[in-house]
Length: 305
Ligand SMILES: Nc1ncnc2c1ncn2[C@@H]1O[C@H](COP(=O)(O)OP(=O)(O)OP(=O)(O)O)[C@@H](O)[C@H]1O
Ligand SMILES: [Mg+2]
Image 1 (spheres, helix red, strand yellow):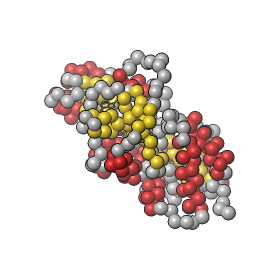
Image 2 (tube, rainbow, N blue to C red):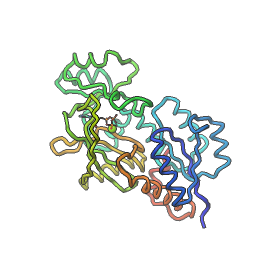
Image 3 (tube, rainbow, N blue to C red):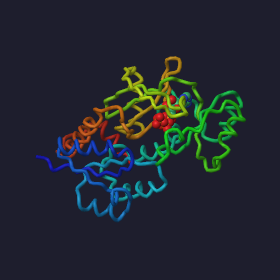
Image 4 (cartoon, rainbow, N blue to C red):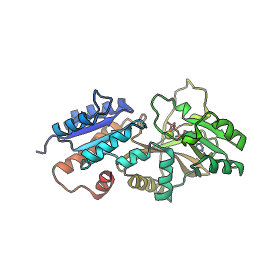
C-alpha cells in the first residue's frame, strides 16, 4: 500500500474550481492538500519551510495572479523544494504572467504554431501600424487581480494616431503593454483546454465585440479539433513545461491563430475537468510513490524548474 499522497498548493486564482478539485481528490483518492500560503493567502518563507518539514509533499501546484511578489515564491520553491515535481513548471508559470514572454517563447520554440505578428516595443508597434497593420493593444500582465476581463484589452489601433491616443494614459517606459496584429472581428473565439493528453475545445463569445456588458447568457459549444493542430498544442505544452493549460485561438481563413496562452486556466465550462485533473494528480503521484516508471513525457514536463 503506497503512503498517503500529500499535495502542496500555492494558489490564489480561480479558487472555486480548485476547492472542487481538492474535495474530489480527497473523497476519491484520499489525497491530502496542504495550503502553503500562510492564512491561506500570503506567502512567508518561514511558514513554507515549516510546512515542508512537517509534510512529505509529493507534488506541488502553483496557480497565481501575476504579481511582482511572486518572485519570492519562485525563489523559495527553487531553493527549498527543487526536487518536488510541479503540475506546471515554475518557468511556465512565470512566462505566462507576461503576454510578451509567452509569445516570445512560442516564436522561439513552437515555430509551426501560427500566432498574429507580435510587437514587443512601442517603436516596433508604431512602425507596424504606420505600415497599415492594425494592432490590438493588451496589458502585458496576464492575470491581474480584481481587473475585469473588459479592462485587460486596451483597444484596437488602425493608424498611428489611434495608437498614440489609446496608450496615452499608460506608462510606456514601463513596458506594460503588448501589441499584436489585430486579425479582425470574429463572432467566436475558440478555447482549448488541455489536461495532460486530453484536449477539449469550446467556442465562446468574443468579448471585445461587446464592450458593453451583455446580460445574455454565454453559450459554449464543443467543437472538434484538427489532429495536427492538437499535436502542435501538446508540443507547445511540453516546450513550456505545462501539463494543464489553455490556449485561445481565432480562425482566420480557416487557419487557427493562437491569441492567448494560460497556465492552469479556470476550466469554467468544462465540468469533467475536476475529475480529470484529480485523476492526473493521483496517477502522477502514485507512479512516483510506488516507484514505478514515470513516463518520460511527464518527467520532462514537471521537473524542469
Ligand atoms: N490578435 C487578435 N486579433 C483579433 N482578435 C483578438 C486578438 N487577440 C485577442 N483577440 C480577441 O480578444 C479576446 C480577448 O483576448 P485574450 O484572450 O488575449 O484576453 P484575455 O484577457 O485572456 O480574455 P479572456 O479571459 O476572454 O480569454 C480574444 O478572445 C479574441 O476574441
Ligand atoms: Mg484569453
